[in-house]
Image (cartoon, rainbow, N blue to C red; front, side):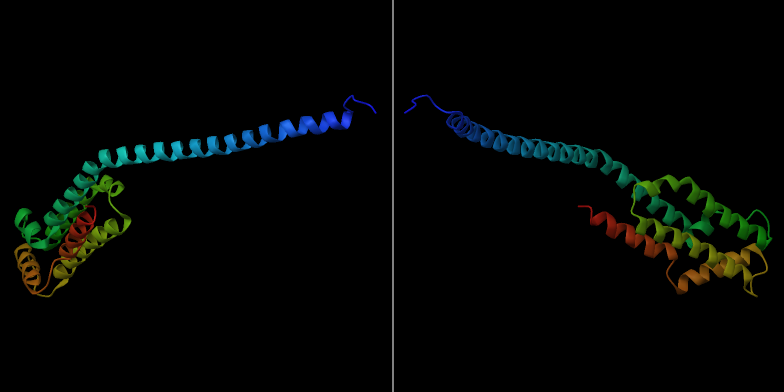
Amino acid sequence: MNTHPTLETKLIDALLYAIPALITGLVAYYFFKEFIKNEEARRRFLIQKDMQVNSMPLRLQAYERMAIFLERITPSKLIVRVTPTSSNKDSYENLLIANIEQEFEHNLAQQIYISDDCWNIISAAKNATIQLIRKASLSEKTDTATKLREVVLTEMMEKRAPSDAALAYIKQEVSAMW
């Protein structure tokens, strides 16, 4: 008999030594891959958390500014703040609407920090306020700027201002942030 190991025996011995090393290598690769994945997720979480901490004051400031905007366009407050320059009702109507539009344009950038639903409700409140002023101007009773002021104020005594609903929505959304 031949006592020298054959090629087959050498190959089998090599495989028996290689298989555990291969399995160990695959297990190590799997654990390393999972570790890297978890570290990446942890880093993303920390970055997101840091961004939230830094962006929270900006978001709150945006909600505050939009609340101020809604308060300023409330018809009863708008009429007290913006006085007519003449007795012409059309020029006063245009002045009121221009004031609302100017306030809105001044706050356009705030939409970045608030939800789309909230922004749409604020826009709807602005448009409803403009429509309320236009409707009051079209009234048969309205023939002067002073009369337009009276009609709008009377209208506000009978129903809520459009900005009230939007302001309530802002308060609800901000309280949900805590």
